[in-house]
Every structure is written in structure tokens, then in C-alpha cells.
Length: 210
Image (cartoon, rainbow, N blue to C red; front, top):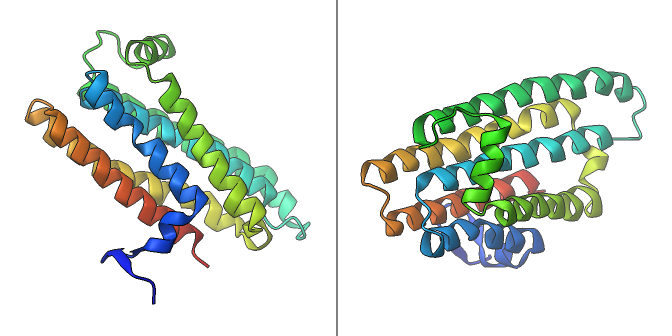
């Protein structure tokens, strides 16, 4: 039996998987921001919010490629893929407005111009790029290379991102309130990032378990 690093189910061999290694490295970027870029809680939560977009984009690709041998599913995809884009897009937008409204110090409310300003002010570009690289690598290594697409269920794929996103961001937002209440000490912010890494790895492993 594999030795467990945590009672919650992460084995040592799990940490050798390329997709898990990339996921952990990408999630360390907010620690760099907290230590060297004077980040408070807002840029951390905003960076995590951009992960919603990456998850949604990759999930659209998963839905399109799911079980290609079943030709009758293509008619369903013509309806379900656009519906997912609209519904998940609205969910993501609402989440972004929530983060901006509660944690942002910017005068303007959430809009694209303000978003680009925030990305520049907090040097988020590399963090956002790394998030998309991480999810793209996982998509290739697990879904394509390991041929998960051959047995993927379209209805399950449509709902899958919601559970992950809600669970992860409930953890980070509750932690964000605590960090903000205590005036964002760097040590507590780093603990929040580490907690998010553990949760993210657990969710990732559960999602791709055989």
C-alpha cells in the first residue's frame, strides 16, 4: 500500500505525476506575490478567479471531444456546449463581481478595463499564463494521452466544473475574509495558498482516478 502524506488521500506516488507537479508549481505563484510583490488578499483571489476561466475553456474542449465514437452525441453537443458556455460564463462573471465588490480597493466596479489595470498593477500576467498552462497540460496528459475522452460522459462533464470551482473558492473566499479581517499578514496568506494547494491536488486526483 502506498504511504500517505495526508490522511485525506494523497499518496507519495501521486506527487510524482507530471500534472500534479505542474499544478503545485503553478499554485506557488501567489506565495511569490505575497513575499516579493506586497500582495494582499485581493490579487490572490483574483488570480484564483481566472482559474475559473481556464477550467471552463478546457471543459468546453472536453465536451466537444467526449466519446467521439458515439455519433448520436454530436446532436446533444450542439445544444449542451453553448448552454454550458452561457450558464458557466454567467456564473464566472458573478463570482468575479463578488470578489471585486468585497475585496477590491479600486474605485471602478468590475469591468474589462479595470481588469487589465489590475493585472498590470499586481503583475498577474505570468500567474494567469501559468494557470492556463497547468490546465492545458492536465487536459493533454489525462484526458488525451490517457484516453479519458473515450469513456467521458457528456452530462457529467457539463456539471463537473461547478463542484470543483464552488468547493475550491468557498475555501479560498472564507480564508480571504479571515486574512482581510486580520489585515492580511503574509504568513496567514501563505497558509491560505498552501491550503488551496492541498484541496486542489485532492480534487484533481479524485477527478482523474480510475
